[in-house]
Image (cartoon, rainbow, N blue to C red; front, side, top):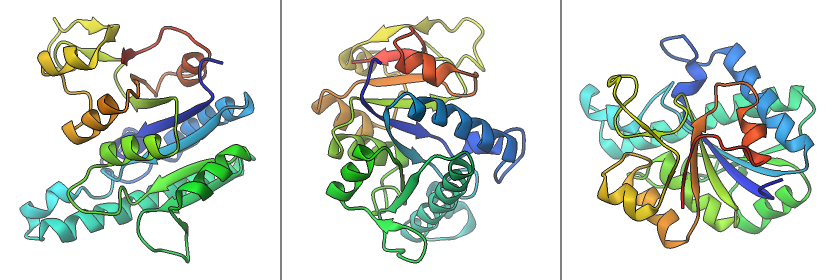
Length: 234
């Protein structure tokens, strides 16, 4: 296997499937299937999932809600998605632990680094919810931070496109896929890989990022086995 311990970043929007909002049970089951294949190979898997299918903190201003309050609402949305993914994984026989950046002891454990690492060492999938626990930070930033804390080998950012392009491939038919990039090239070309805080954390800690299409069956397992999938930033 190419990696021993990975952090998988999933967007909340990806859970919508073809719906306008909420959680698509078919997409949820698909993701749980893909994650199980990797766990069965002996990999240690941590996951950070967004909450955009339910609420995004940045939407708060538009409906007259204070940004800090909005970000906390977004954190709760990631907990809902985390609980859904945990349930789906456990239905398939995968042991999981849901950890939160904010106190919520009735539904999940508080994030404690050493405890999270121990869960991973025991073969449990650890889902990190509630972002960093602080407003003004995205789940991309949470993914980078948690990956560094648990000493993951890589951040795998599962999206609906198969890598990083010179432009948005859904809008520009002339967009060209880039196979491999350095952190400096991403900055120079102003490519949108992650938000700047998340990207800087990875760059300073020499943590590679792989952007790939999570919706294509077997992409995740092939990627961790060493196949040339998506775009690698290192």
